[in-house]
Length: 353
Image 1 (cartoon, rainbow, N blue to C red):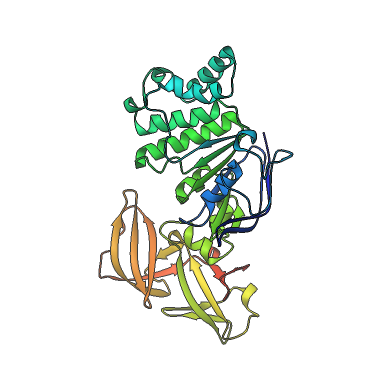
Image 2 (tube, one colour):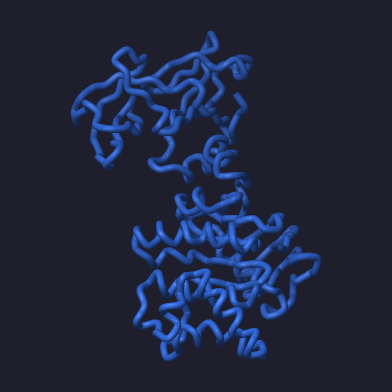
């Protein structure tokens, strides 16, 4: 198992700074997920660890070695891309053997590694097929196997599931998690899909415009987001926001609702701008709830429903189990679970409350 340590990393493409002053310590053997919207720098960071981009400043250590300017072949990493990048005229076995042939691996050792990877990824029945005879999920397994046979200390995966349909993505997510448990390799995985991040990661790194917004376990990122940007990006439906101000008497007032501030915020000045945020699953519809909203849409999702509402001119969503007795056009009463309320200051940073 191998640690990856990145210090004060900067990456420029021409005059555009994609990554600036980034520090990141990837623990040995963990499954780290880089999460963020398109253009946030997550793939650029991954490619730079692999040696595919030049570093403008800072350093990258893989294990105990400085690999900042090392060639990709010297870094001991395996890379899996979004596209399968398989050779169409080669069989699965030949595709798996190819990187080992390039490294002049002995034939008996090559056979051992290929057979081990094929067994691990359930590819044994497919070894004599060509990529055109495989499904998308099978092709991605072969691409992952090609990285595994190199026995790389670090596996880098750049949105490997994004070309697959929903069911295959779910199946391969589970397989990847089981694969990590068996291999114990350090894995760094790039995605914009928060479900992938939450289900796969040991820790999540949330990025925006080349800057790390938060690093934490899935539970920490979801329950205790560092700022409103993280709170809004992680979670579906998106977190509900109520921008407002502190009023006299230790009250918080926003369009459509007013409530007492928690004791930890009681000493803050009257007139200060705050944002109250609550996850949709923590919005509770109740006949005696203190607040009201108008129902705009009821979205059935099988074992639960999403209720889309308006409260004081602001959108509000609630996730309810089962079949709720709510219809479009109704006015409903609701409450916001006090233990699950999140507070953010004018700079959109979370306040401990």
